[in-house]
Length: 390
Image 1: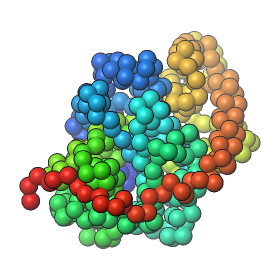
Image 2 (image 1 turned 30 degrees about the vertical axis):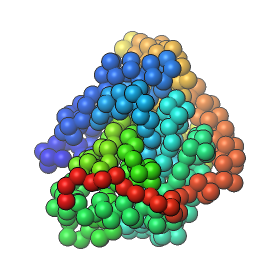
Image 3 (image 1 turned 90 degrees about the vertical axis):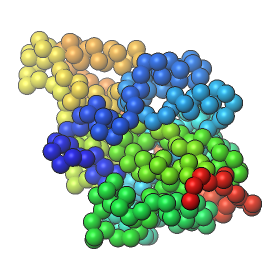
């Protein structure tokens, strides 16, 4: 990211007021157009996930080509992951809820990577025991969104290294130090674990192709901050005989206190709603959440609020407005001044509390089988497609 930009977006740092149109230009990704949404809706059986319909997922790489392959009889698999640095918050679940929808609509296998190694390398205050513990708890939360256990596979990096390492070795040979230094801004003090990590994050993109001995397309829904990892992956994919992964990029959700993104490791705990927050804590945090309201009730009734900067509106936009009609009503009443911020927060609080209660019940149902989905060994006879070039 050029130094003159007012915002910074990398896999390891997000700061500033993000201009998402400008970010898409800087990263060289494609806009999700109405035509692409129409195609997704058709192939998904006539509906769109709210994150697509409301523009949270707004950018992509090669999704149109992937859908053409799918319609031509070439199924794809899904890949996404989580770096376990603490408990999950409500925004963390969004990409996995979206992946679960894609799995159900396209009958796609899902591969989830829990990168307990990467978070140990990147977070100075975390121990390996902590990243492992957080990883296992995060995995339970992720599976609780409703993935089909028969079509869902987990790479827990320190447990799955025998499965990942053969592919990572091939990847590492084709990615040089100058590339990762330029892409991620690594310095001489960066530990060598992070230098190798790009190879490990690439491995799941190729695993089904390697395991099956034939190319299988890959689709990665992720925050746009993760795109640099997969630009490196895409650059070397075909030289190893694998398809370039396609990507769907989401915007980052704002924190409760303003423009900063919602984060597990931020220095202000009230900026995030965690999945284990009790009802009273949900109420307290949302009551003080930053909004786009006016200084007085009279002014808001007259001029309306500004939802684009409102953390409460962002939560309605993602999952808490259960229909597009409900979201359109929230949007209309907010802008017109018919809906005051206190009333909006009050309605949202009950929905969030109900969602978290339901999620906790689902967690207990998946806990008993969660670790059984971890891939620890490659299948016998796994063989990569023929590489291209040296």
